[in-house]
Image (cartoon, rainbow, N blue to C red):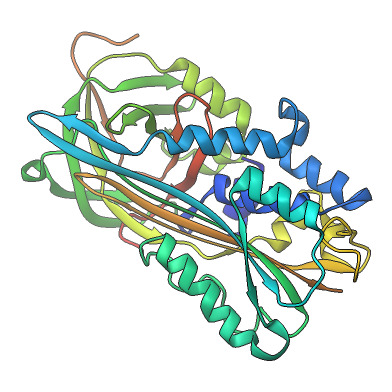
Length: 371
């Protein structure tokens, strides 16, 4: 939620999507090698004080919980597949002296093995290898996470996380009922876009300044929470959209029938996270004062960059979403009648694990026609 506020501000009036889960895992892996003020700052950004016990063990527990979700689920007379896959990988300089305890912790708690590459003489080949791994893990939805020029001969380690989701709705929209409608953007201009329509037993809330609906995926373990601020109040509502507000909205949801009209959308957002993370409170990690002596005792390291790219597509059948993060380390109650909810103005969304509350994807749609 902290990171969303900065990414939203940095993207003007554009659509935004990112994966809090992917960003947090990649940073948490890097944090295992931080010491001193660098570690303290990273703990603050990660809200590590909220973890019950060891941070790595907490992420390991979350990984195990998410691993139990994918599979075959009944839908009427058929079985449908929900895909949810996560993966972590280290790409390290061959011959460099990485601390064995650091590598053991990442292997045991994050399932992250080490692949040796040669940044010193083949940095472009290493970049292509990392991008190929990310593309494979995200079903080619994130084909080039790391652009040219980011990795160089001073790079020693790239820590990567990837997540892929392909989840059918528990209550799919009837494509025959999809019809064009008008969506009003933040600046008041209008665009014509396909709206999906369904009346179903969705959980719904109407609170001060917003309306919200929960769209479950098959199995009911994952959900999309859609929050629609009142007309003309999106910017004000978004500025206060923090973890407390999210919890308040979730607690207010109640069962009932909702006649929902919801736009299809598909887009991606490329988000360099380095400026936002520094502003959130971990600037030292990006400077020569960084202390990553838990990664190696051979040299002084700093984070060169943190790259993040997500993709999301929502249609009548469900949601496909993917994201990848790379941390580059180198030197230096409802009425009986259905409630009508037409989402024809900018809205916020979160894809969450119901039990843990972990947010896998989060963002806003200000223009469903924009790619």
